[in-house]
Amino acid sequence: MIELNARVRPYMTVKALLIWVTSILIFTIAGIAVYFFSWPVWLYYIFIDLLLLELAGFVILRPWIYTKVTSYELFEDRIVVRQGFFTVKTQMIPIKRAQGVEFKTGPLSRKYDLAAVSIKTAGIGIDMPPLQIDEARGLKSDIIDIVKEESTDV
Image 1 (cartoon, rainbow, N blue to C red):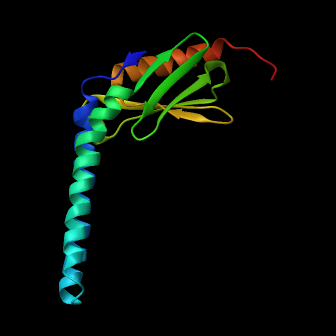
Image 2 (image 1 turned 60 degrees about the vertical axis):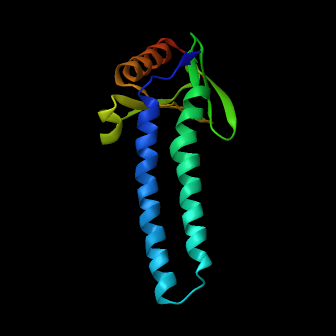
């Protein structure tokens, strides 16, 4: 199985930090509401605990565990992806059944030279983990080439 690039962990950490900052803003507004509406003071402690749990779980632990667990492998007839954080799942799609391949990048992922590839079939789809842009383009091309060679009457 092919392991993830070393850039995936900092990318996931920065992405989680951006979400965490949004949570700080939301809990700050909730804290202001606690002050103005004279709600119980213990709500402040709940807000702080939730922010600390989110920091520990999703900003620090999730990128580390996800990059250790996640891998993929492209065979001639199928692709196998193993990924997860709380629950680890292994998915397999027969490449010849693929109906669409999507290549996505965003501003943050381009900064880390990463892209995402999604493979869709009639029944299911696999969202690949973040891959290097060149690797993702190559994977997309390989899948398209395999699908082009398939001639079926199904």
